[in-house]
Image (cartoon, rainbow, N blue to C red; front, side, top):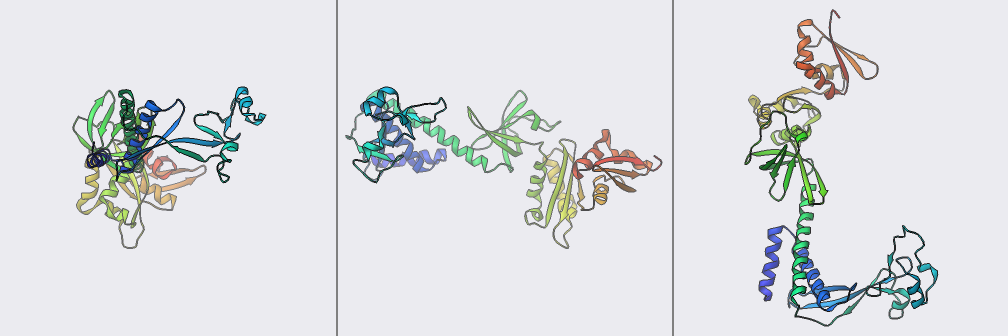
Length: 373
């Protein structure tokens, strides 16, 4: 391959895989070093290749690590051969030093004879005879190294890209449904939506595009796995951030969220700027903003309430739409909400949902009673 074609190939790989050209060049140098070692080197040797992109010339070097007794250990035979003391012996099983190998190590006492400034941990490189012809097995080795390293670099790149997006909204298309797990095409990676992060009552089909909350990135034996969610409470706040510029602008703050995915969410908001109506900003003109979020959630009900530093007022707001007559603050973070009898069922909600969400939202254990009780 001529130099122009070679440079073009590096650029193409870099663009297609999203890997820096410097990284692609490094991978090719590693592959050439592996091929050289396979064809001309010795077992255990460390070979380094340096490719000059301007001339297309590759130089090969043998690398030796300068070591002392803090870095390597030796067996009795090696100690006798080099005439060294007991400090090089391995005394414990959990000794983290590596065994001395003449092909890749050089003792500090030897290296210092050539360079008095050298110290343990440094490297000595020796220029090797330049070779151009590699056998079939060596060429195959180089090819395998390139493919493997490219895959590893691509995985690392994807891992870093999605790691930086943890806690953010991403858009994905359903690629396939495998049992109770749904896999999304996220562009440069695959997102996994497990059963516990799905919304009860939602129906999913291949080809469907949905917004998702990027929960976390896990590293497995098969590479990075991107876990996404549609049930996580913060998914709601991130959807509102997309619709309500006052949140990103700092005029409105979401203080807390309580959610039962697929059914109902309560969200407490506070105005951080005089003259800004926090609830009005969240709802939008004619309800356009909250409707957009509810549509993304398949019609899940959303109660937007005003946050208050006063626990009584906050609990009263959290129990809306029920009208609360009074709230008694009791020990151990408990509260008693008093209502008229006709408001009792509304305050408790179907299957206790309203009071349960209010408790989650405020952080108080809430008991609801009508006046007569």
